[in-house]
Image (cartoon, rainbow, N blue to C red):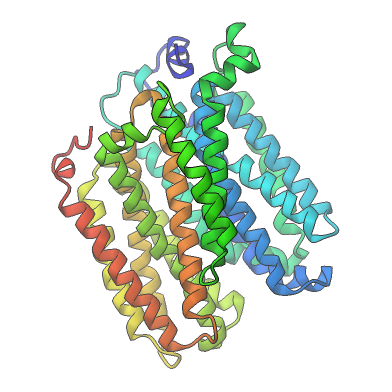
Length: 472
């Protein structure tokens, strides 16, 4: 019996009336916001951090990449642990890791300590989204809901993409007022609040059976060899991608050496961590992952690539660049919840693809002499892309993932999103390698047009998205 099933059995009574009260959803939203905030808030603190620690600015990139890497590996792992050990337990453990990471970073005296802090924060924040999806799915089952709880999923979307978009402006204000350490220390009050809310308001997981609490039993149920193989494979892949256009052959070799035996092992397991056969058979879920990766490639290219262009070629300050992109976060937050309430998939995904193509075409028309209103319009258009894609793909994930694997599936959903994010930084590094120019920005726009067309094809040609209930 899975933890999800046991959790259902231990459901509180009276859920049919109001299963998703604010006391249930608030801890989930706060926890889910920790990862995107920490992903983006550090951006404005890298330059003063480097000056204070007397290190090259380029070396601080490890603080960004380490969190991405830790998150890409830890998201599905946390989801699997939530399915086996209980979502509330894993959620609380993740919050404590973020608290520890905030303390280590706030007291850090060198780049090594700050890197450890970012890894702890990356692992800890990775527990929130998959655990939230497990808890929401379990609560919906207990309440007898046939449709996804659209309003709750919309709240998760706001906690995710919208907070990522407003991270740079918040970071600029924090760093400007209290120094770069505030980008780490901000985690302390937030995690304390999240921990207290979780302990007080989220229902307890059922007690583990004595056999389930043994390490060997747990390792077998979560497929520990599969997790370790996946971690090694993903680490090598991410390191390889982050170094492009320079080819790190060692990372590529490690990727190949670990990917093959990991795939062999997972194909032989009756209940694998990374269900390759299930993923191949569940085309709706696979296409959802691909759409999410391609869409986040576009959104994060705007957030970081266009920001870099605005500062280096357009000639605005970091704070003003963040403010010019603030409409993207605002539009994403405003549209996410009303879109999610309708439980639509195909319509929002088509809207996301079309606006991504239109916005990318707009990027190709910008130059260092364009009026600021042009940049704001692009930001607004990609705000629609962000909201529609996040809501549509998140609802598709909820419907397509098997109920007993929703945690792992949700973690992989975020992992594919991180691959899109990492790819966006790779493409930005390539086109702006020698100099940040209008031509490089137009190349980014062209790449995003192609990505938008792929998202459109993955949507309109998907027969599983034709009906309101699809995918199922």
